[in-house]
Image (cartoon, rainbow, N blue to C red; front, side, top):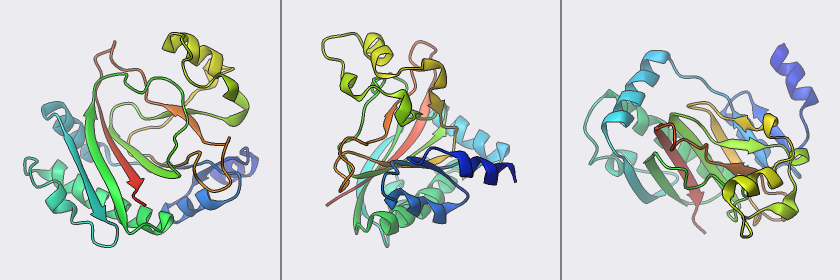
Length: 220
């Protein structure tokens, strides 16, 4: 009941999905973000956390959305329960995103991240993108009413100064949790220019943290 009430009062430009089927709401006019707040069993999450801590992953390929062959995509990774779990989940998400995007081919990138490379709040040029952080801190984003879009980009400033200029209320930055799925709408989605979701990678480098992130993009 609490979730139902929350969905009623959300600002119109983002949605919380109750399940994978609700990710289709990204095509709603004005909506630029859908978040599926799914959970994973702690024991399963622990396996992936340990796998990410032990291996530096960086695997990228263009896959067919109706038959992604994810097992081949991850064939060079050490065989274990964590790899099998990731393969099954990536297979499911590639197929799902293929239906959402209508694209027959998708670029899939699974990588371990330990830097602050994307720490500047920004919008994507891509029309649609799916992101999942399997381990570590998830993507951060802000609501449209908390953004000064004319301040996007560093424009000769430090990243910290630029972020303070871009985000009006830093205390209201929102963060995704591990295993949550986001479908993001960027600037090139038809009719969405000036409304791409503003987001960034969480700053983790100083704390010595490590993430395992999946990114799925359309290939036109």
